[in-house]
Image 1 (cartoon, rainbow, N blue to C red):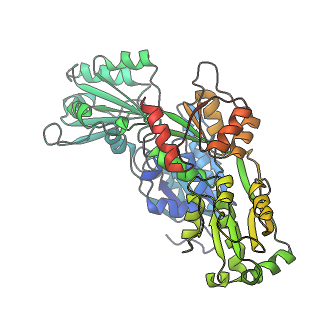
Image 2: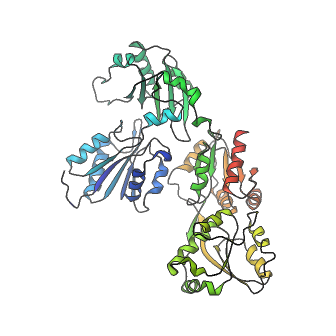
Image 3: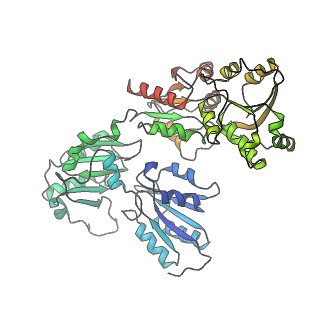
Length: 509
């Protein structure tokens, strides 16, 4: 296929079964490079955070009979954007060529003269059973596996499925997209000779922290699904391998599985806490309440930065944001970290120290209790009179530290290098999920996140769980109490690991 040089390219990319851990490296690379991202209902929306800020993002989801765009409209969209010379990413849940209509879209592209590449993804047909403790093959139970669509093309006059052959087929049968037709599927299999006692399992939102599973038999499962209100998206596993679930169900045994936790950190910082909670099985809703806005550096401040080693004895950081933004400007002026000279460094806690460690810098002072007050007290024993301090921080920083250093005779320059503003965007729909589904726990890592969360006035719908507050440190606890919140627990230390451990204990009580 010889495409015109001014034509773009379309990448048909498998987004995997839902867990970000199961997205391929190639998929992430293409998301980061794409001009246009056209994504489906079953794609984890958190993947969009990897896309460029200027990338066009188009939702083309299909859920049951609800279609944002018809297939013809999607096809036309892909061709149109590619002919305009853009790199187009068609992001499809699971694998594009496993009941994903990827083959049809590829044919349309070929006929339109648009070059394409297909990037396989991990299909939910294998991944969801694995996360529910069900291997699709096993030497003692099944030497073959059959994938079957539970949602045939409605325009076909007759079913393409040979139900008699399916009923008599040995091994594991996996139906994708078949929850709505489950009663029809089980009835036909029994009518054609399958044993009514054949084990059946359904897995909903497999591999994600929203995963739900249930078991039955061909004779009982349809009634159980209706009684429980078990809805799509789900896959159905039929066969003796389902018996292994009771022994191999590893994922749903994680300590925080079934616990929904709201993370209120800034969008840039939330991922570290989220990852730790997800590793324990928690269903995490990232709802940032603030975002960091770097402030422009005036010419006079840049001139101070140029001679910083001669101007100051101490460089003091009270947040990881301050470290990141300070050194972003520092390296524009100084290509070598040794331009800091013999300056002493002080930090408020391990997260800030970790940011310095990334630059191979080690603080001289770090308090054992990670608060601004304890950092101020940590300077006891140091000769402060006449010493020059540079404090890069945010606009809302606690003045306690600067005041303390001045009281001890220090000469303090406060560099306000960023601001914190309320976060209003909800690109992944987590605020909507919180309102409709509620949560069990909500984390607060600073006073500003507590104050801004309070200002949002978000509340779960009637009958949904209302989260209990978990605070990271006494200052944040004090702020929450002033706002009228009941504190379920405060982490022993002001660290993410301590916060996560606190939630883990709460979740298993």
